[in-house]
Image (cartoon, rainbow, N blue to C red; front, side, top):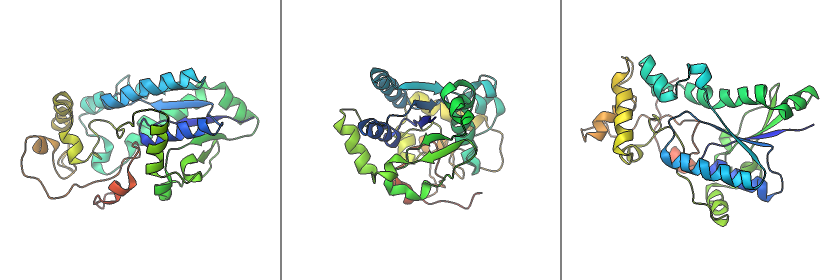
Length: 260
């Protein structure tokens, strides 16, 4: 008995991974998207399109969230009500664990008979992760008591350009990088490209937070200052977010600090 689930992040890598598996005649049993409630509007549009694409091919696609564990709040509401910034602003990656991985783990454990049957038979559920061949260093999750992790793009030698080529071949518009619109991992040009409404909501999170350990969503600088055109430090204090489909070449050009 086997069961496979694909973690769909809504960006280039996870989209190309899904298309690649279908092309290879090995579609996953389930595609899962974990919704923080704060994704970019373009990501939600792409999500809707890919849900329809999967439905046409008989592939189950589910959207899960962490709302029940956070009193029904979205991540944005959680930050506002708790008067704090996303954990990445403090140098930790709790967002990706609490708002992405845990909801998917919970769904598989509580709502998927196929996964339960696989475990009952002594097997491991296969989790497909969208890391491409240009970022092999990130493909390092070992099997655990429930899951074995596979990286189809790495296995097939498909890098970022190859992912874009797969998406183009299918006639699908390449999605933008997926992340929350207030993610501390965003680059300055991405922040400035946000709509006025999203900028306002991000600044509201920043100004509402009670913290003396960091300056704001930029860790050692404030998004508000950037948006209002004030002078800033020459470089971002940047920590990659595991929620996103990153361009590895761009990521490697970003300075990282010594946060835990």
